[in-house]
Image 1: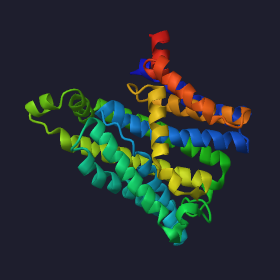
Image 2: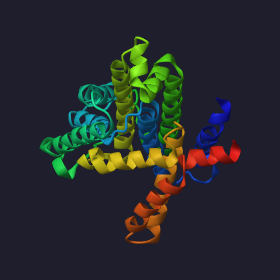
Image 3: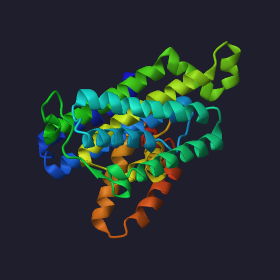
Image 4: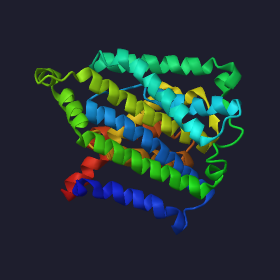
Length: 308
C-alpha cells in the first residue's frame, strides 16, 4: 500500500508547501484550488470507473447539483456551511441515487448513454431556473461562511481546505475499495455472475457506490461554487463530464490516485496552452488523444513502470 501511495503523498505535500515557496499569489492559489477541486471530482469518478467499472458520462451533473445547492441557498440568505454542506451533498447523493437506480440496470454503452441523458436533463433544468440566473448563471453574494466566520474568503485557508478535502476524498475512496464493499464492487466489475453465484447481488453495491461518488461530486461542487463565486449550467454539461473522464484516463483509470495526477496535468496543460496561443483548443484536444493512445496505463502507469 505504501509503495503505491508514495507519489500521491508527494503530490499532496508539494501542494501543501507550494504557497510557502513563493506560489501563494492570487493567480497561483486560484489555479491550484481549481486543480484540487477537479481532482476531487475526478477521484470520485475514478472510484466508479476503476472500482465498479461504471463509465459515467454524466458525472459533472452531481458536481453541478452541489454547486447549484450553494447558489439556491445563497439566494435565500443561507450561507452557513453547517447547513449548506449537508444540503448540497444530500442533493447530489439523492440525484445520483434516483438516476443510478435506472442507469445501473444497464451496462456498457447503454450505461454511458443513460448517464449522458440524465446529465443533459440536469443541464437543461439548470438552464430553465430563471430565478437563479438561467443560462447566464448566478453570482454568489458571498462565499459560504464557516461557523459565522468568512474563513473561505481567506485565499490561503481556502487552499488548505481544498487540499485537506482532496486528501480525505482519495483516502476515503482507497479505504472503501480495500474494504469488503470494495472487493464486491471489483468482483462485480470483473464477473457479475460469479458474485451472484456466491449469494451477493451486485446491484445494491453498485448503486451505493454510485451514490457515494455522487455525494463526493456534490462536495466538489460546493468548493467550485465558492472558488469561482459563480454557478452556471455549464458546470453540468456533458463537456465537463468528458473532461473529468479524460482526467481519469490521462491519470490512469486502474489507479485511484491517477485521477489526481490527471487533474493536475489537465489544468496545467490547459492553462499553459491558453497563454501561448489564441486557438489553443486546436492543440489541446489532439494532445489529450495522443496521451491516451501512447501513455498506456496513464501517467500513474508510466510512473509505476519506472519505479516498479
